[in-house]
Image (tube, rainbow, N blue to C red):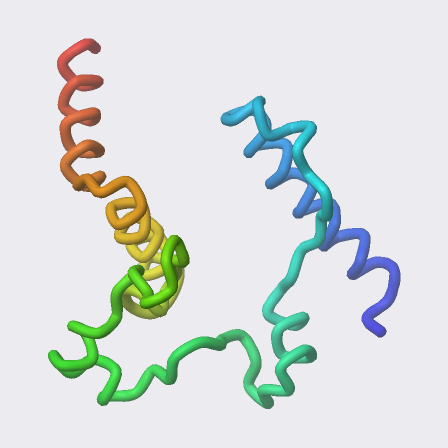
Length: 127
Protein backbone atom coordinates (compact mmCIF):
# COMPACT_ATOMS: atom_id res chain seq x y z
CA UNK A 1 0.00 0.00 0.00
CA UNK A 2 2.85 2.41 0.72
CA UNK A 3 4.94 1.55 -2.29
CA UNK A 4 8.18 -0.22 -2.97
CA UNK A 5 10.36 2.73 -1.90
CA UNK A 6 8.84 2.62 1.61
CA UNK A 7 9.22 -1.16 1.81
CA UNK A 8 12.85 -0.97 0.65
CA UNK A 9 13.69 1.75 3.19
CA UNK A 10 11.97 -0.16 5.99
CA UNK A 11 13.84 -3.39 5.20
CA UNK A 12 17.16 -1.55 4.75
CA UNK A 13 16.77 -0.16 8.28
CA UNK A 14 15.72 -3.54 9.61
CA UNK A 15 18.73 -5.20 7.98
CA UNK A 16 21.12 -2.65 9.53
CA UNK A 17 19.60 -3.26 12.97
CA UNK A 18 19.87 -7.04 12.51
CA UNK A 19 23.48 -6.83 11.30
CA UNK A 20 24.44 -4.73 14.33
CA UNK A 21 22.74 -7.22 16.64
CA UNK A 22 24.70 -10.04 14.95
CA UNK A 23 27.97 -8.13 15.40
CA UNK A 24 27.24 -7.80 19.10
CA UNK A 25 25.84 -11.32 19.49
CA UNK A 26 27.27 -13.50 16.68
CA UNK A 27 25.63 -16.62 18.08
CA UNK A 28 22.20 -15.40 16.90
CA UNK A 29 23.14 -14.99 13.23
CA UNK A 30 21.88 -18.37 12.02
CA UNK A 31 18.94 -18.53 14.44
CA UNK A 32 16.44 -16.28 12.68
CA UNK A 33 13.25 -17.97 11.48
CA UNK A 34 11.24 -14.92 10.51
CA UNK A 35 12.34 -11.35 9.88
CA UNK A 36 10.17 -8.25 9.56
CA UNK A 37 10.02 -4.70 10.81
CA UNK A 38 7.16 -2.52 11.90
CA UNK A 39 7.05 1.26 11.93
CA UNK A 40 4.59 3.69 13.51
CA UNK A 41 2.80 3.67 10.15
CA UNK A 42 2.53 -0.13 10.32
CA UNK A 43 1.11 0.09 13.82
CA UNK A 44 -1.37 2.77 12.81
CA UNK A 45 -2.59 0.60 9.93
CA UNK A 46 -2.70 -2.69 11.86
CA UNK A 47 -4.52 -1.49 14.95
CA UNK A 48 -6.66 1.17 13.30
CA UNK A 49 -5.60 3.92 15.68
CA UNK A 50 -6.34 7.29 14.07
CA UNK A 51 -3.26 8.85 15.67
CA UNK A 52 -1.20 5.65 15.41
CA UNK A 53 2.18 5.07 16.97
CA UNK A 54 1.27 3.64 20.38
CA UNK A 55 -0.40 0.60 21.85
CA UNK A 56 -0.49 -1.22 25.16
CA UNK A 57 -1.94 0.16 28.35
CA UNK A 58 -3.69 3.51 28.21
CA UNK A 59 -1.39 6.36 29.13
CA UNK A 60 -3.83 8.10 31.42
CA UNK A 61 -3.56 9.35 35.00
CA UNK A 62 -4.99 6.11 36.46
CA UNK A 63 -2.05 4.17 35.06
CA UNK A 64 0.39 6.19 37.14
CA UNK A 65 -1.41 5.86 40.47
CA UNK A 66 0.49 3.94 43.17
CA UNK A 67 -1.93 0.98 43.26
CA UNK A 68 -1.58 0.45 39.50
CA UNK A 69 2.20 0.79 39.57
CA UNK A 70 2.35 -1.94 42.21
CA UNK A 71 0.44 -4.27 39.87
CA UNK A 72 2.68 -3.69 36.83
CA UNK A 73 5.16 -6.53 37.19
CA UNK A 74 6.88 -9.00 34.85
CA UNK A 75 5.63 -12.02 36.80
CA UNK A 76 2.31 -13.59 35.82
CA UNK A 77 0.20 -16.36 37.35
CA UNK A 78 1.27 -18.59 34.43
CA UNK A 79 4.48 -20.47 35.30
CA UNK A 80 7.49 -19.27 33.26
CA UNK A 81 5.49 -16.57 31.45
CA UNK A 82 6.91 -13.10 31.98
CA UNK A 83 5.83 -9.73 30.63
CA UNK A 84 8.24 -7.09 29.39
CA UNK A 85 8.34 -3.73 27.69
CA UNK A 86 6.71 -0.43 28.47
CA UNK A 87 3.67 -2.00 30.13
CA UNK A 88 5.87 -3.31 32.95
CA UNK A 89 7.37 0.10 33.59
CA UNK A 90 6.43 3.40 32.02
CA UNK A 91 5.69 4.79 28.59
CA UNK A 92 7.95 4.95 25.60
CA UNK A 93 11.37 3.72 24.61
CA UNK A 94 13.03 4.31 27.98
CA UNK A 95 10.10 2.63 29.72
CA UNK A 96 10.49 -0.37 27.42
CA UNK A 97 14.21 -0.57 28.27
CA UNK A 98 13.49 -0.49 31.98
CA UNK A 99 10.71 -3.04 31.47
CA UNK A 100 13.30 -5.34 29.89
CA UNK A 101 15.60 -4.91 32.88
CA UNK A 102 12.75 -5.59 35.32
CA UNK A 103 11.90 -8.73 33.37
CA UNK A 104 15.54 -9.87 33.37
CA UNK A 105 15.57 -9.41 37.16
CA UNK A 106 12.48 -11.59 37.49
CA UNK A 107 13.67 -14.32 35.11
CA UNK A 108 17.21 -14.48 36.52
CA UNK A 109 16.11 -13.88 40.12
CA UNK A 110 18.86 -11.30 40.58
CA UNK A 111 19.28 -7.55 40.54
CA UNK A 112 20.61 -6.84 37.06
CA UNK A 113 20.58 -3.12 37.82
CA UNK A 114 23.33 -3.73 40.40
CA UNK A 115 25.11 -6.00 37.91
CA UNK A 116 25.12 -3.20 35.33
CA UNK A 117 26.41 -0.63 37.84
CA UNK A 118 29.14 -3.00 39.02
CA UNK A 119 30.13 -3.77 35.43
CA UNK A 120 30.34 -0.08 34.64
CA UNK A 121 32.57 0.50 37.67
CA UNK A 122 34.80 -2.43 36.72
CA UNK A 123 35.16 -1.19 33.14
CA UNK A 124 35.97 2.34 34.30
CA UNK A 125 38.56 0.98 36.71
CA UNK A 126 40.25 -1.07 33.97
CA UNK A 127 40.60 1.88 31.55
